[in-house]
Length: 237
Image (cartoon, rainbow, N blue to C red; front, side, top):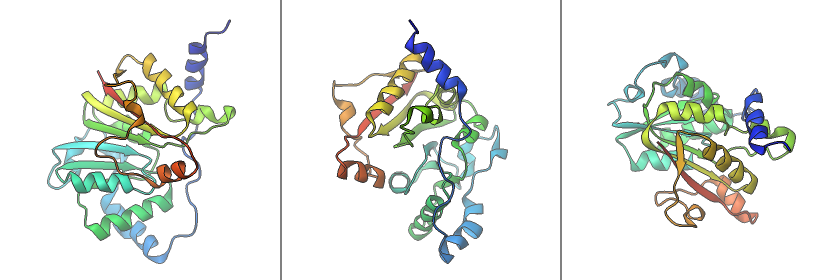
């Protein structure tokens, strides 16, 4: 009989060309287009930072740096940055319209401690120094629900290897999803990975959001449609 763990590793090894869907939706409004042209270059993180301490991307240098992958409407990213002005936040997003909306909110609120990586987050994780990130958020990633699509899910051994490399020992990796299958998929890979541990304080703490949680539009949609979110905190050993 085939070992399901072998199938899991084979699915991870196949990888995918991208872990996100389309890059652009509706045509940008004139102000959004202007922000993408003029404001984004000042906020963007480039992969040429390879080896550079990411705290130096901020002025003044950040006390620590946290990353949110696939920030969507940026509700959580902006709330975290506004509440923690001494921490530097890097938001990774490949969807152009989402980036444009985030830039508008960042400019309106004059938030200084957010930088944007406008591409596949895996590219950024590959060039960051070891133990340079204090917290990693992956909130409601695309679940790629069809069996033939699952190889495109971002959570894989390769992703966890990169995340473990950049996270400091003891750092949190926070993961949220409203898809039961994706929760099980992620837990299986965490349990297989030697650098991460899941240690729930209570038997149901994964059913409650974090104390500093900000509801995202994706979560609001899930709740409207009757899906139950799950909130996992994994620790880098």
